[in-house]
Image 1 (cartoon, helix red, strand yellow):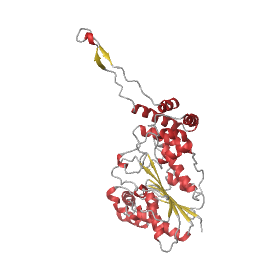
Image 2 (cartoon, rainbow, N blue to C red; image 1 turned 90 degrees about the vertical axis):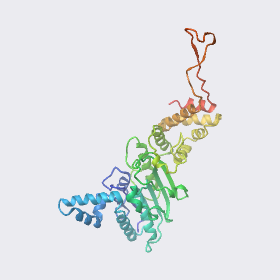
Image 3 (tube, rainbow, N blue to C red; image 1 turned 90 degrees about the horizontal axis):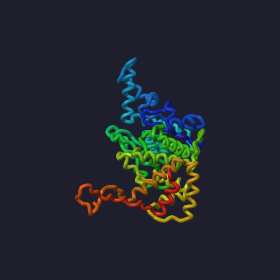
Image 4 (cartoon, rainbow, N blue to C red; image 1 turned 60 degrees about the vertical axis):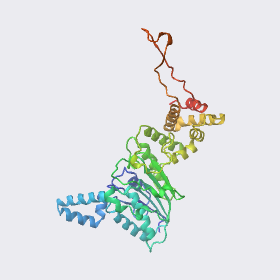
Length: 395
């Protein structure tokens, strides 16, 4: 009986051949024997899933016929799977059969998109199987979305949205920047009121930003890789070359994300349902960013969490000065993000600065050659806290 079985579920149109995508890359560097220690399930619409499903192959032949026309049928069936998620049940049933055979002591799962939904369905199917004893499971879900609205409403049932009690830990990355209004919203209800089993990481960028490297969201994919690897590694999945990031490195990546967000990219109104108490923050991407910043740079984090306070203690000044030196060396992205935040805070609290004629000079009013007196822009007024932070964060 294996100790840990790790199950990877690919997203729509993806399978093991997409080796640069996060889920497939994790599977291919998992230590152990495939089919015993780990498995990878192809996503709906992929060639791999088409080849696994006898019904899909028969449908392809019926639609396109044999010979050259059979290729047409295959592409039609794959397109149907891509649109509707058809084939997810093939993965669920095959995985449950394997679990029934292997009887693992624990199960870890990771999936993206419809693959994340497949994780939930597998967890429910295993839990409900009367001949399978209760197996503790851990799930990492990357932007769990069932697909387009009209074609996938039937995929959004309690079987695919309810996290069973056998799941001891469930983490989810929820992308805040997908703008495809025809796609269903990501699964968020289980994460609105979090308990000790659940953790959510709101991230900027579109649906695939966490699983594929793409500009300007490279820091999102790197951090996502670290989060999933750490999650699996800490729960018994043995991986080659785990990317273990410290708090300062994580803050550096989040700082880079804040600079991207400052350009107006990374969040859309279509994803306002993603729960994130830090969405309007000038400083932090999400709660995880704040917690890691509190570890790496506690004094600086405290100062920026209380920007409305005019004063700042000498002890806090000393702590920040030391942290800034480390930040410049170890987390330049965080340093630049803090710099932008303090500048934005200062400018947002200054009076309007206009340079325009406001009072004509009395004795010469109406006379040829008379001049007007120009109002001087009001002096910039800084609090002691702002003055110190500006001295430390000069960009």
